[in-house]
Length: 81
Image (cartoon, rainbow, N blue to C red):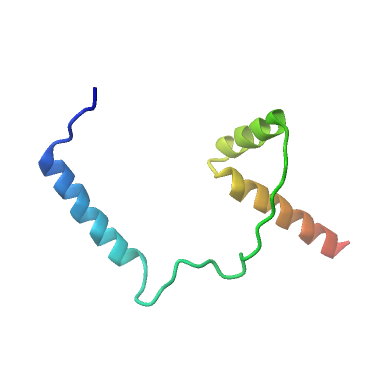
């Protein structure tokens, strides 16, 4: 059975959401991420993926952010070598 939300609360949340959207992005901003144009697909076993998820959760990060940081850290190490 679906729960019903208080209409007054729903209206307040809607207004706050609209205000936040307007304040969060400057005029003319786009949703595009500069310098993040390429996407790599990586195959992991279920166990490897679970490990990545576990480490990411422990660091309070999305898994994709964690993996990207690992790649960038390794690239930085390779440049320094």
